[in-house]
Image 1 (cartoon, rainbow, N blue to C red):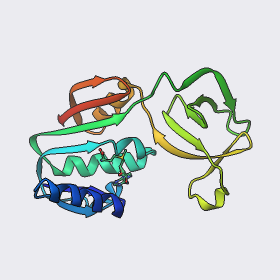
Image 2 (image 1 turned 45 degrees about the vertical axis):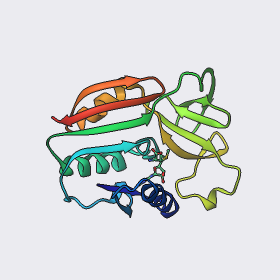
Image 3 (image 1 turned 90 degrees about the vertical axis):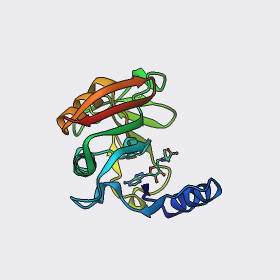
Length: 181
Ligand SMILES: C[S@@+](CC[C@H](N)C(=O)[O-])C[C@H]1O[C@@H](n2cnc3c(N)ncnc32)[C@H](O)[C@@H]1O
């Protein structure tokens, strides 16, 4: 079994847990957006709450292409991901960016969301110069940090990416099971 995460410390913790449980897992520090176009083939590929942190379409398309290239015919792609959360969405509290005309909604304590794209932004406490991709919205600096889609939008995205969705369920935490279309 192979497993990846972009953060070395996360991989080290996972290695310790696997050793305690006597699991034989080959861990690597790797950016899921930067996998080679080809690789080993798998009967099951699991994304455990990583996809919500892959914000932009181009990066997500690279992830899906890498999964497609590695999934055996008849294999399963299981995505567990944090979806758009009605409880954090403030329908009546909007922020309009005069430059782009985009209307954002307040989302959680210090966040915004573009409900059309599902891109969620977190307000920066520190200088935006410290953060690649920091963006100014109505005079305040934010970082695009998560992608929280509604279930139909996630299904459509996976289908556009070449998967057939066999099962989709859950609430704010959703599980989707796909095969190659
Ligand atoms: C919410 S945590 C989930 C951790 C673990 N997979 C689990 O299910 O308990 C999200 C994980 O995704 C990893 N991650 C975020 N972006 C990534 C990327 N581009 N490539 C690989 N891993 C990434 C983070 O380092 C973090 O460990």
